[in-house]
Length: 202
Image (cartoon, rainbow, N blue to C red; front, side):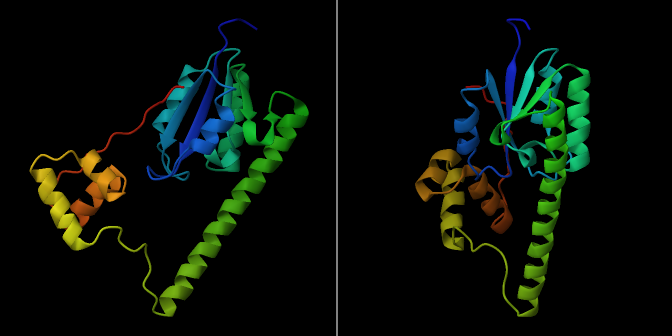
């Protein structure tokens, strides 16, 4: 073990509206750096996660808050653990106090990965069944709009006149991304630009 060993923490939230505060609070004292990704757990593209994996070297440790924060499936979790083990990189699941370097830890890790995937699939199935039942009853689905059309028109005009979208979104009580997306969807005429958080260190 060398003094240069790194402890990197990977955090993920599904949308920009979600906050990673719980993960940050639980991992800040354990890691040298925290990397935050905004992406759905099912997506195949996770550039921040790939970046963290590339930075890890012999003797380093990868910390994740929970299984579903880093892995898409049981196979993904096992393959990643195998690849890290071959590189002599430790994997630590903080919320489970689980270190996969030990035989017992690896066994528990495999079983819990399968359980986590089963739970995700079960929730997805129940959600789809619930939505289908609601549609059959004629219920209108979807989140009610945060901003009504008139407010969006005013916001678009203010942005066109030079108002900072971030400041305007703060005044309206919404995330800048949500504001810009709503304007583009309902009014058009604005080019939607976003910045992905590739990493964040604490």
